[in-house]
Length: 260
Ligand SMILES: [Mg+2]
Image 1 (cartoon, rainbow, N blue to C red):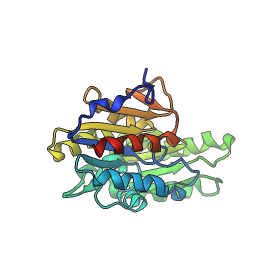
Image 2 (image 1 turned 180 degrees about the horizontal axis):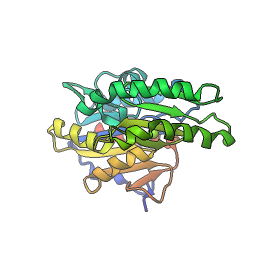
Image 3 (image 1 turned 120 degrees about the horizontal axis):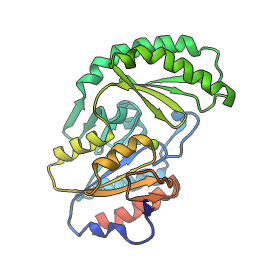
Image 4 (image 1 turned 90 degrees about the vertical axis):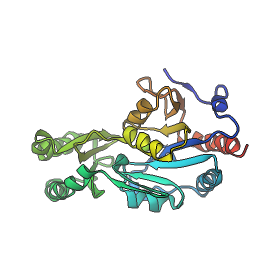
């Protein structure tokens, strides 16, 4: 069971002068989840906090998201950050650029599935596709309750052959079904990959709110500070925050530590 982060000083593990790597999820962590992900924007306050943190020579900042790399980079807009798009399949940052070969391979298959799904969901109010180049999301947050099983069914039927052939895999998120390349690579692997590139023995902090972040909590267990947004009993995270609205307070604490 995770404990509430603000009960006690859990940043004491960061000693003065110690380098650390801060990993953040975007939707549901830095910004509240919206019906339309295109309408999620970073507040000026949080952006300024991130900017201040990146100025510290002790902190490496990474943002990992299910969004495409170009989308997440544009939405945050700070150049010195490491970004991992498509759940870490597509990474770029200072001196670093990597796209997983299986993601490149899956690109054309995903394009085909998109065309097919587009036809199938036509006419279903509230269902829409988000093309993220190497992954594809079917959003149903705005679909009427009784229509949801129908949408799920369409998705399952359309993607079945690719799941069977193991060329693609499925991720179930919050009111979204996602098609991704079948690959043993996730946010957790991406975090370890970035840490290896940093070559500093830095302490890690990871903050996320969703199922995909659990892979990172697991990868960092015993070697970092992991924080899940929203209390969940079934989590690998050490700590939790009550909601994304508490993240800013946490960033402020981190910022203080980095300026020591
Ligand atoms: Mg999230």
